Image 1 (cartoon, rainbow, N blue to C red):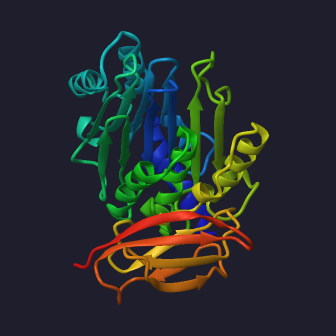
Image 2: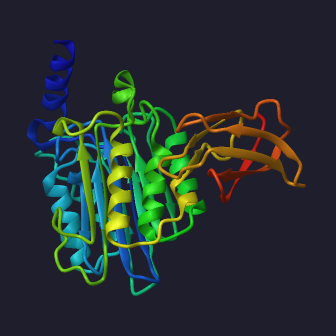
Image 3: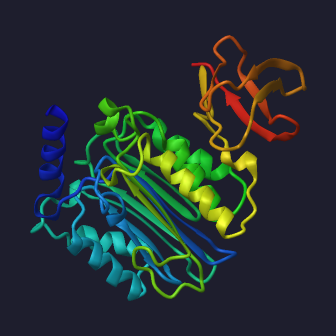
Length: 335
């Protein structure tokens, strides 16, 4: 009964008058392939819970309007991008012309925008000071990561690190970003349920795509707990469907790319998610090649305690039953 009341209350609180409080997300582009990507998650459990914020304008860019999301602001941002405004110009316009009729004020909003700009990508983000803590954004040359109602700033830091350290195509990087965010209460409202979020999505548009509406892009995966089709964390469900997509699309799967580690840099405990990589052993070596420890992976999410090690750079080599899958680097810093 308590769970039912919580669900009803959440629905009323975050859906009234079109308002929705969305949580962590990323927009990014690949200037070489012309691909445009969008991914995110929230503690809203419905089909349109997280994916509402995703707006990809084919051949141009992507916009996430989140935190007290309104259709009017999202549609206005879409129109400004089609009109040729840069990401920073769109955000400036949105701040000056915020629609308050659907609820919230400009300081409640959060935006992340990126465009291709003929191979010279532009990005911009905005986090209003009335967003619920923890809040913030991280912006790079071809990406914008943003979040609010987070359990900690580490969610954003780990997402950015995963993007910058993961090899492979854009979709692989976006999936790694989502895995890096995953932890109980990444959206702090979901902490009581011991999950990161209640709905999640990943979308990538190819230059050959002709329809950007939900379900029509080259990669377009959306999961939500209210569907009743899975138990566990939505990001793990997203990963499973993503892996199935890569196999069906005959895309190369690098098993090392399936493995996520966070946080990085670390201060004490390193979290590892082996996903479906098949890794069974992890060997940790120092910068000079000295073996520090070897761990048999008896669970899919092992933890490594670095608290007794000295600050510095370490390498994690992953092995399945017969082969070396590859190496990931971590940096240990002591407070």
